[in-house]
Image 1 (cartoon, rainbow, N blue to C red):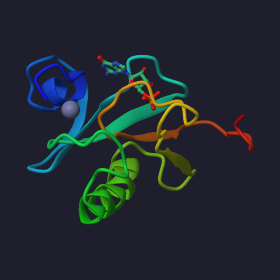
Image 2 (cartoon, rainbow, N blue to C red; image 1 turned 135 degrees about the horizontal axis):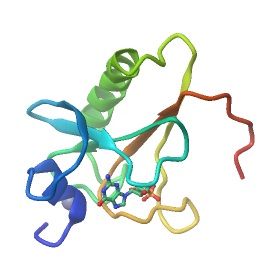
Image 3 (cartoon, protein in one colour; image 1 turned 45 degrees about the vertical axis):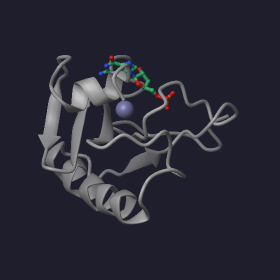
Image 4 (cartoon, rainbow, N blue to C red; image 1 turned 60 degrees about the horizontal axis):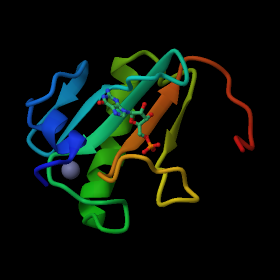
Length: 111
Ligand code: 5GP
Ligand code: ZN
């Protein structure tokens, strides 16, 4: 999508602080981190949300999340994966992204 900010970041047209990249996805630091570690895992192909994406791609990204958590040093201490979806889910960018958050103890429920 030509006016999608995460498509542009994934394509390298808008700069970001990337921590991982392969042919299917990128992971980069969130502009407004909610915790010491906060990165967004984003597929290179556009999908409005998790329901519109190929399940195999979502599974691939979830697998990479553990790998990226290890790279960022939060695999042992633990982390949280969040996929905000739609209005009530608090989704503000309409391109599928998985939040990978860690580096501090988090409470539950978060709302
Ligand atoms: P959502 O609320 O849609 O689940 O999360 C969108 C996230 O994207 C927010 O945490 C926000 O800080 C982040 N974000 C929005 N625009 C940009 C951007 O241009 N660059 C980066 N790195 N993060 C962004
Ligand atoms: Zn997009």
